Length: 505
Image (cartoon, rainbow, N blue to C red):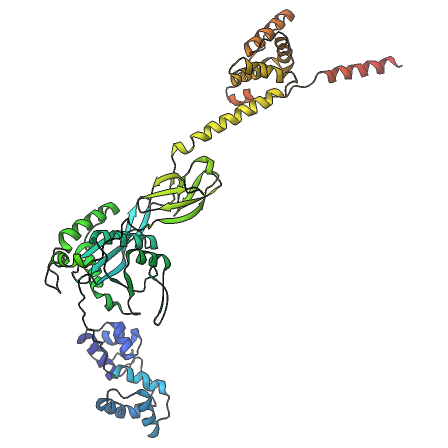
């Protein structure tokens, strides 16, 4: 690093107040070089042996630098190619790139001048949408965004905070802003947001389809700014800056509901009542003369709801933005349509009928269920259990079908009687209960109580002891286990074969 470079770096930093990155870009050096130069106060930095740090080898351009500087002093707009050819004629053997890099910091910085335009009342509005931090909602931390629309003539501001930058939120903010102003401007300025512009090459612009549906509904003309020209919507850029410095700075955000409420109070009680720095009038006063030039609202607000096709799970739940919401159980495993606004969620079937409604949650990984969505499911399960109970009873014996019809004809509680018959089988065995059932069927005595009395009579006639109940303290559920009874006639056949084998010898 020579003295000239060291001195220029320090001058740019101390006098012109440029940042280290700006100095590195202007001088075409690394930021580390700038840092070393600023750390050395008495002269160019040197190493431990006293040698200049970062010394460059002699350049082929060194002998022509004085000539180049003099030519630029006389003709600042002289092109690099023109100078390259001139020094080539004088014996320069280096490349053009070295010359162009040397010229970059020598040329005066070009500052663009912008013409300030004032618009007619109702002619223009400007819109911007910016991230302004994060906010904790329940178990989720979500990004907080600020939507601002400013009427260009009056500087009347509409302000709203959102928890995402989805297209539907962007459209909803427009609808709310139009309602706030009570009308629609002729044109609205935007930068090249993805919510507005999907494709742009030069003057060829392709707008987002649903955004154009909104523009066609409210009859305003969207006007995107030029690429990298945010100054074309400087009024709303200043509005965003004003929100950051005058409203958000130093404010502790406790909840999304609070920040929305405080924003409305600040907007109506301070922002639109202040003396504006450019117009030197209050925006609310200028708005009174601008309101009549806005186009009237077309009627009902534009539908900005999120619409998605969602499959319901086997548990009758639909998934939306990490959360799950219940639907009536009969829609399990079916595809439904979800419509979400900022406040609630509605779910519709394929015929367009609303089948469920929930309050929209901005937390994450939560499940929201309504008990009425599962009431029918319990009845269906009881019906299934009753059907299974009848099927089991009919398999006991062919005569059970006739006995079941008798129970039904007697208008008895069929399920309760079948359960009691099953309990008798567990206690006395299938053979005894079926014998009693056939006896009851022959006498048209329908009911579990008749069968139980017949069993007791038959057992008393045989002087059979009452079966002992087994109490399982550690595994009480085992007492409900049903064991299939073995046909004892197999043993009779076995004994008969044994007797025949003994008689043959």
